[in-house]
Amino acid sequence: MSFCPVPHTSRDQGWLVTGALLGASAALYARRLYAARSRGQTAKRHGGPTLASADPALYPYLLEKGTRPSEPLQELFAAVEREPRARMMGSPDEAHFLGWLVELMGAKRVLEVGVFRGSTTLALASALPQEGEVVALELNGDFCSTGRRYWDKAGVGGKIDLRLRPPAGSMRLL
Image 1 (cartoon, rainbow, N blue to C red):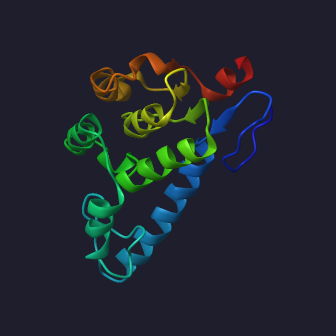
Image 2: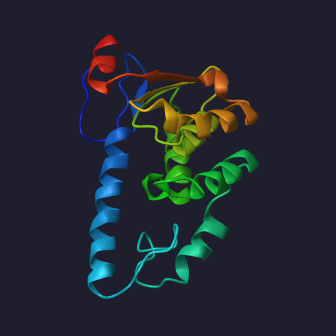
Image 3: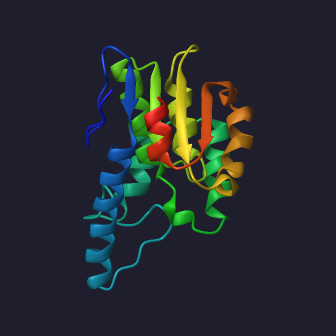
């Protein structure tokens, strides 16, 4: 299996690779955040310069009307926002988009490179069919402990294979 810098599926193995998409999203967010700060604006929680950077009132509307997070996912987002480095978490609209992408593509296996607190992992696992699997690669198990509680609460803990080791070595083992 080869890894390319954009999300894709491999027909022979059925993987959806999400790390590159999240990396691109983070780069876009950082660029917009830098632009907003240079104009004297600040971002608050996930209401900052993301999809709706032109109109700050639009983002809360998009979250309310455009996403349908489960109760465990909503609780996880709230819990992570109280934790250190909460800004590293994927935003609710990103989690929703990736879950939708999993459903649209009919993916059965997802490779997530970088889990952090596990909110996107929960969204991905929830979108998979019952026999689906998320292989989640992370270096820091302390961060993942927050998400694990909610993975089990949502009933998708059995779909998530969390591997706590350097991603490059883990990918070679796949």
